[in-house]
Image 1 (spheres, rainbow, N blue to C red):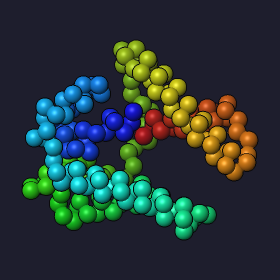
Image 2: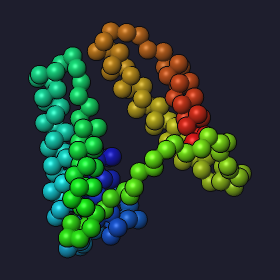
Image 3: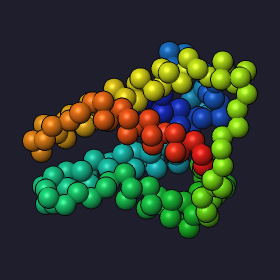
Length: 168
């Protein structure tokens, strides 16, 4: 599901298919095939291939030391993008923009009751899905490394992390 929602960005069609729902996305791609950015497709394929390759190298040669393949690829392609100006012509690859040089100020979050009413349902759904994903990952690590997991403790930790994160 997550991968399929990223297809429009992997093809460089994020602006063209910006507000298209996931089921409609696959119907709209053939209609808009001329909008596909070949440079974005090449970079996407290279990134995915590098992550798969690094993962197999990890498993084969560094079983005890894990190389974070996503981080390596992100740093490498961010550097390549900056060095080659991939966001400008002729490449025109969509980039996120510049990175902040510091953390945002620590302050209480601003909200109104209208915003709370608007966001409560999606926030609860996101919280439940996030908890389920976190628990499944934690349980797989626990099974692999033979330790016990307390789901309540994981829920409290996840909640505390999100509350602290809301202050930035």
